[in-house]
Length: 517
DNA sequence: TTCCGACAGTGGGGTCGCAAT
DNA sequence: ATTGCGACCCCACTATCGGAA
Image (cartoon, rainbow, N blue to C red; front, side, top):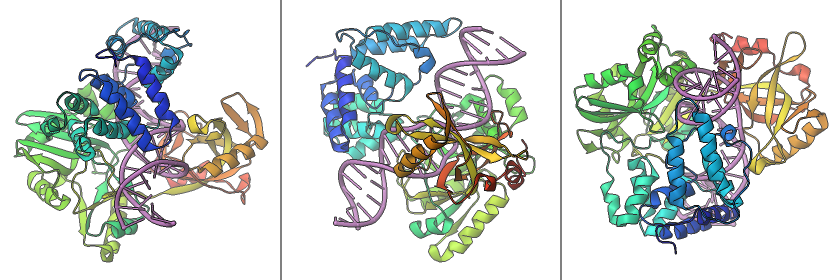
């Protein structure tokens, strides 16, 4: 065993082995074995690496920066620590000439790596390790390696916001150290997420007594206030405090002084109706001239949950009790609009609430069990979102060769609607919704319609009609009609339809009068 | 034995900011 | 000034494993 000088080749070997097995239990065992070998101060490197992530986060290195392949080293020499030091240096490069300098450092690293190590590093740098194990499997491996109960490790990770500090503590001090991870104001926790349901009735049927809340099409935000200090975090726990001063002010106006709230920020018009997601996202993404951005597109926080008040951790309380705290803390307009139903016999009322929500211009609803605790970081089925689905019959104009498990299959479809002149206008692409059987079938069928194959995109005669589901229309500068479909996915092929029967751009635009191309 | 929850994989479009052109 | 790239918002859906029922 290499004490304190674990080689990168060891990680590359384990990653390859993990990728080669399909059994999750075996993946966990392989990771656990490696984690046991890591020193406490190597753990914060080894564990994210084997979870498919870099401890530094993104480094400004993508496929273009990686450039051409570099001749691999003959023998493994890179250590985990050495690699990490080099990548830390790479991440700190900025200013003029930085792209070239990053490329040089990447080249240096790759040149020192064996072919196996290069493959592993490539996966890490591009975020595509494809070993069938990410954070969740690594958490299990960490639990197995240290003898800590998996549920307690998961909880610590959700409270810490990431795997690394938990890994460091566990490897250094063992399972008792998990108790040091508590909900702390100022330290963001992984947010609770929702599953999908196809109707409100179905959702209420599954959850029983529940709240039905408006689903706002904005940006998720976690607000931490400790006295005058307010911090704002996104769904991935990025700190966006500096970008949303009006949200900070709103948090300071509340009478309680220590709390953690969960909600959405959204740009609303003068009439209180939501502005487009594109406008909200643009505003939240603006960092340079925040004052001008806030002037042009002010946003409002709308809260739906409270995780902590005055140092009381509310995570394990049932939602009904957390909401009572929320109602005490946050006045009406800053709280999400909702209705409470007692169970399936109230499904009609819930459906009516959805209809009203849509009339107010919102995205849909989230149906939430009144009993459920806040299970951060885990996709519990106690929150179910329901959004209306639109469908269209479109024509396949081209398809792209797939990657990974879709290698050799035509996967990503280019979708077109009919135009007035008898041609087709591309509206976007989709790779979603296909079963393996559909992938196989469409690969064969599209090959028979192929007109050109540049090795990436196969252009086909526009004859195959496909039914596409989508969430809505949005403006686009990329596509000729000036619009594109949001979250397009395949429902089924319509071999009973000829391309002349496909939907037109005109009818699509007419169905979404609020969108101006 | 069957069912179902959790997970990973497969990428989609838009917007912003920075560096390069 | 414009373009290209990368990061990060939003996200749907299927396949699979393995524990629950």
